[in-house]
Length: 330
Image (cartoon, rainbow, N blue to C red; front, side):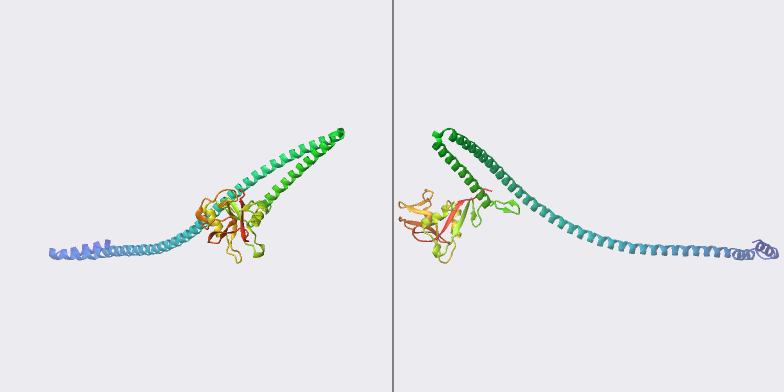
């Protein structure tokens, strides 16, 4: 810079004779020569800054593109994850509903078993009390028997009377023991032991249950069919009787179970003519005359025919038969 000023000064001094305009022009040229490198340097600096800004923007655009790609893959991954989680949750909900249904079923079974257990416990308690009472009775009878033995020894005149009393007491003991046996047989028949526990049923094996009664249908072969009286005796031997029908539902049940078996014309029921009136074996009159419309004659009884209603036939004919007795309340 010092050398340039010296040159400028020398130019001024050498050209004192030049015009003011020419001097000014030369001064401008010198000024441009001095300032041009500085402007170029400034222009280069500005270009460098613009280049740096451009690179900066390019980097920002690049990073922004990478970020968008990463964000897109993240969204896809989250969507896949949500779908998997939704599927897992749906499967778990189905399994939970299944478990709830199983729990409800188990609770119902447990409730039924509890009720049955309570019933059996009550029955067991009643039998225990009956057994205790019978034990007391047997003990009392035994005491009376011993007293009777003493009287026999001490009072010879009362020997025969005491012997009679002894026989009566022995008979009572046997009757009590027989009753216990019968009760036990009934319990075993209606409440057989299965898997170590008693399970009671309203009807015996082979009997049909309807409403509060049990029925057994005998569709015997021709050689084994019975008259009305024989059929009733057979039912009586089974602690039952020929079926007495009390309502339309029972009539429908009896008709539907009067099986259409080859060789069987019908099934005896507990209805016959007495004094030209239809009467049930329990002594009641047949009030629903629409149930059997055939003419009433003595010595005729009613049979049930499959899906045909009732017919009157001679009581001496041989047919199948239907027994009925009360169902066990369990």
